Image 1 (cartoon, rainbow, N blue to C red):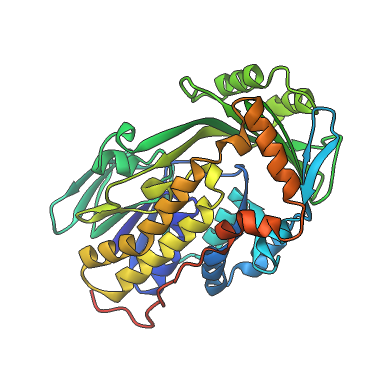
Image 2 (image 1 turned 90 degrees about the horizontal axis):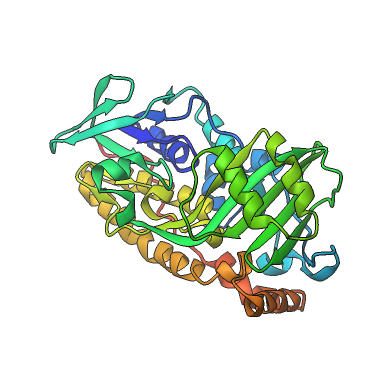
Length: 394
């Protein structure tokens, strides 16, 4: 089949890899003029790691990724409040790593070779599904026909907006904004240690990368409109983080010079169905669990693999779409439900929540407590369907 994937982040190229393997003719269209860089650090493990192994990309992920040895909570003067070894949570670092989101996307895309058509600087404007095909009108003015269209275009999906309805119907804002930006030659470094500082209303994190690079990350409470332009986003960060201690003033000072700057709301996407007719959604476009869940990228990889597997198993796209959703929707919705209660860990609302956060982090350093407290999130197992050796004729 001729299949259009909208979005070249993580879910889109993963889906393209597996669709191409089963003989489909795949096109990816990406609104950005080039493949994106920047973004925040993501933790990658579980069934997403299993899919990456099957794709043969784990060695490169390890080259680009990190295994942090300590997560350390500090006070406004930089003194340690609590710390724990992430390995205590995941029990082994052999199937877990942290990696910049853009690096994960890049490694997945590189695995495609030159076997998939990529169109940059364009996106869909209209989708006309007549039951036999989807006629796609692009922003560039061209029109093409496809057998299926899959929206892998993230939290603010254009495909979802066109085919299912406006964002307000499906997006649940969690009252937080997230910002991440890089800093070259930042004066302080703590190798392979995640430093976390929280006050009422927000949290700042510093992560030291190789090549003298540093990632600075903020999560802040915000009840108003979320700005779109970078200048307005930086103003909001300065306003919300004003008065915070530790290194926050220095972090804000280097922010305007950051080459890679990411800013977005912490939101979830909750859809009654992940497909309609010949159009489906995958990744954050279908069921974004939010930054707070910590598993969005791994889940996106799993969703893309599962959708491709089901499409390789049958000639009936409706059957494939239904099985794909039935396999994963209960798990994803449970992750979304759990994430809604994690706001106090990222940006405590009041002094009591800040106390609870710090107390919990102190217990994480005790033997077995971290595994008990957080282990379920790390050890949830998804039963991946085996990928068919030979797809049915289409």
